[in-house]
Length: 107
Image (cartoon, rainbow, N blue to C red):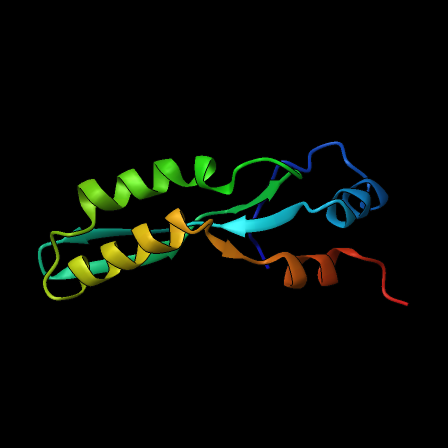
C-alpha cells in the first residue's frame, strides 16, 4: 500500500484488534491544493482513531490546507475543496475494513 498508518506505533496486531472491537477506526482525510488551472485532490496518511476520540480533530489541518490552497484552481478547485471540507467534517474516509483485513494474519 505504501501509506503510513499514524497512531499504531508500538502496538501489536492483537492490541489493534482489541481497540477495533472497542470502536477504533482507520481514517484518511481529503485535501485539495490548486495552482491556477491545476488542482490536486489527495488523501492524508491513514490515522488510527482510538475509541471515543473525535475523528474531526485530526482532519482540521487538512481542512485548513484545502480552505487556503484548494479553491484557487478552475474548475475543480472549488468543487474538490467543498468535497474535502465535507468529507473531513463528517469524520474523514473510513478505511477500517480495508486496513483491518490487511493487517490481520491470513487464516
